[in-house]
Image 1: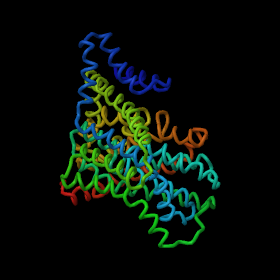
Image 2 (image 1 turned 90 degrees about the vertical axis):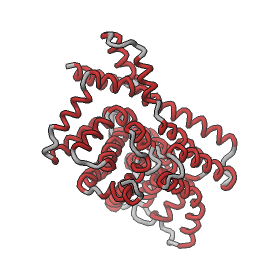
Image 3 (image 1 turned 90 degrees about the horizontal axis):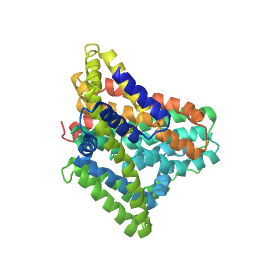
Image 4 (image 1 turned 180 degrees about the vertical axis):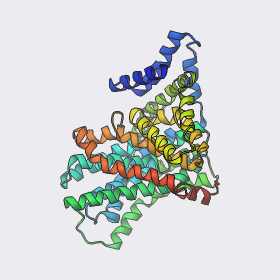
Length: 428
């Protein structure tokens, strides 16, 4: 009864537009006031415990690196490279948007930041080229989820830090799924664009032009390589990697590309602080909310429920993915990773999944929630940039969401998708 009332209250507050951080902090506070089971000081203490995890320091550093690269004109360079790579296929701008999202994801690791940056750059161009605004917004929104998968994924850093897992191992596990999702989005977009006879880049392909575009983007593209191999080879931790990449991003923009001014640095710091604060408010509020769910037995009940289906693998997978997808629709990804992530991890491991496999199922599944109502922040952001109705964007998103859901099934059926690269990197 208590769990049902709590769930109803959460859904009601979210539908009323209450910020998810406020909801997660207010409900346990109200519970303590009414029941008096523990002192009210338990709320800030649980917030402190939730934030007191060293890997979280990497979050603002990765965000700062992405902001610096964006202000340094890297987005335009990546656009030129993406156009030369795939722009000549039917539906060129649609595919360019996906490829650019993948490249930009390797620099900032944030799905929301990718939506805003790529959306502002690509949606007007796609609309001008004859694409429907709903389709343009859908491609940008769903492609941005790659930013939460490919290293340096902020979502993976938060999940690994909260579950005490190796960030490098999960970064390795995310590479193949991230590339496959990008390929799947391009394939879905190609089918749609061929049917609609969409545009394509008409200028003939010239290897020298591709080479010049690659050379202009080379320094930016080396940053994720430095980050990944630096972590894998033990040169620095994930947190130190964030500092190194942020520093290099500033040096490249300021002294090599010469497109980053001191005022750009200030603007990047300002945006990083704001975005970090919005993330960490949810991280902090998830602490007392997790405590409350454990207090009333909700998390234990979820784990027991999933454990009861372990002897029926197909049904377990169906319910496991169902819980992830429904939770992703109802709550913010950061909150889900912190509150439900550890419980789902334990249940998945008990069912025979490996750590990389179940971690990718959880992370990618929750990322799908960023493009579904009622709390899909990437979905809302892309629709607002395109100035299009949410329901039209939602319909346009369906084939892409189906493709990403199908990848979750592949991860279940083909363990090497998430285990091969970590093993190659020496984590297994």
